Amino acid sequence: MTKRDAICETALELFAEKGIEATTTREIAEKAGAAEGTLYRHFDGKDDLAQWLYQRCAHQLEETLNEAAEYASSPPARLEALVRGVFNFYASKPASCTYLLSARQSGLREDDADEALPLPLRRFADALDAGMQDGTFRDAPAPLMAGWILAMVQQTVRSLKADALSIAPQAAIDRTVDAALRLAEAPLA
Image (cartoon, rainbow, N blue to C red; front, side):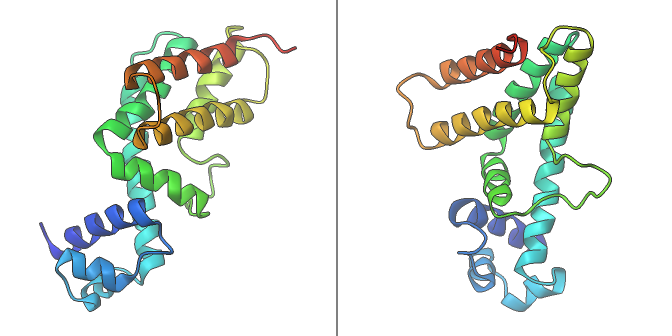
């Protein structure tokens, strides 16, 4: 592992654990076994490092979601695959998932001016749009419904991380998937 890799992995762990603002460049460098100047040789500072990590984690999540939904044959199957994909991402890369959640709250986001919706909202909105077009899902603003579904998923991830549920983790995931599908398929009142 290079010093740059060590700095990146250490920063990811610290940002996920403590948040971006509460983490110092000195702390990152010390825990990575590097001089603080080494961090500045690779990044313009903590904000540049935080943005680079956000981009990396967002792309990792996008790859996970694309793989999860690749063979889904219907909009409900795709929506379920996407929801489960977020949980799989959390299980395989908990620090990256936690960082994406905390970075979004810190106002950090993708630097992609061509896309109005951040990842993974685009993937969810696309699946919901497809379901609306074929009549499977109710007609509602896809970005809004995608946000509601992702908020449910994020809350379940936070609860799983905190071990704050009285049910088994798989049951929590299954209930979240069911709630997402019911939200998308339910008629408007």
